[in-house]
Length: 343
Image (tube, rainbow, N blue to C red):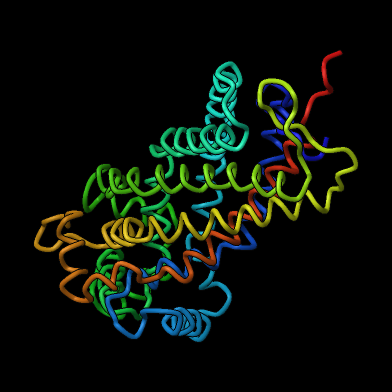
């Protein structure tokens, strides 16, 4: 039973959501500093902040300037905002996966292909359905993450968001909370400012989630078959759990699949995330809001094509750690929320 997929129809929905809130909030708390480091590195225009050496420099700068609190800038905003977003995401993910799996079973699609396709569609559906909630949270939290940071390009934006360009503005930016930052954005740009980079966000997170979940479903199925944890059944081309499979082996497969899918997803979508991040933290210049194309041109002029991989190191680390921790928590959550098999 340990290696068998638990679909949407077999879940206790109430338990799934209320236990999930606490479980995922714990994972978010543990790994949030990676998001702050990645965002600051991407927002910076300084060549010293590129590559893995830049990652270490950004982390050291945060520690020296702000201590532990600096690694949790925007945390409250993210935690509150992701609660409704995660509920929508998980519902859309599981419903889409279940629908595709039912169609695939009727068409006798190979288990590994069906696992990949259903997870790919589920990931895309989950991400697309949450963008209306996620984008404002992203904009506010990322402004908080770079607020007051001594990073060329980012510092000016943060100070401007706080109402000035001086040291006083920087100090005010550091003191701002999520509600204050949201109010400042609305004052400067209207409600549309909270949706800055909406389409770049869609173009980043929908394929990123689709690739991650598609890769995870594909690799989990393949690794399970290679390790003998699942076997092809005689009917419908489905895969069933092999007898005597331990929990440790199943978790090992999940972690390996999460690492492989996380690395590929982060690498392939890093340029999109980089442009989206810079677009969302940038301030209007002479009343003109930066465009996606303008941000991309500026990046290429400053650093060339290699600049598109700025922040890829922490993003891959973040994607792998977030992915493996989240999916392990997610699989555990599904296992404890599974309804008994119908007789």
